[in-house]
Length: 224
Image 1 (cartoon, rainbow, N blue to C red):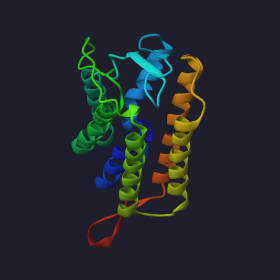
Image 2: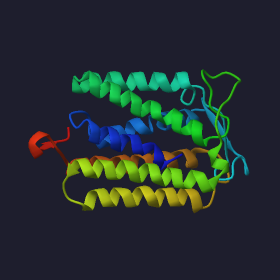
Image 3: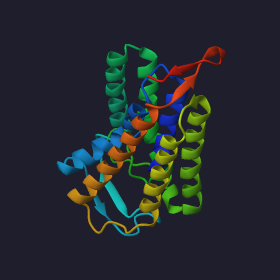
Image 4: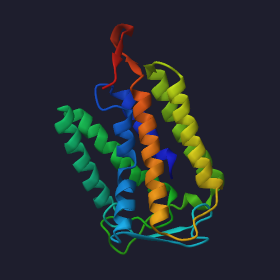
């Protein structure tokens, strides 16, 4: 899963407007992938290109105990929650942020072939929806559109920025699905992934600067 991970970010930003803005939740949604590609560059976690690994994604994610194990994801979620609590002085914002981080593992469990672990052990899990594009593609698009329109329904502001964000999300997903597959795992692939995350996060932050949430009595409140 790629852009579907951002659906919980949209929901969190809209459901609790007193918490972090959308850009922060975009970081939370892909935090473990930020960590994975950073650790892959250091050789700590590893993947390889394996044509046919799944029908949709030719990657064998064979060693990622620190980011994509359930325990590893929980640790990243806890650390991110602490940062949000300290920065915003808001425990609820921290808890919501932790759930956004943790949602990554659940969505990956649905789509990945068995390559996720509980704590880095030999037993690996994953329902393998990537082997069924007829289900995986509608799920991904449905999730992001549902999250996006929920966010839009709860906020007010110029339309241009969120439309640009949505177009960028769908365009990068199209490239991910229909563009040429990588020939090998290496620095270029890792940087490309991190650049995509960074671009979407910047667009989300830009969008949030111009969105206001509807509060009690119909008054608009700035989403902090």
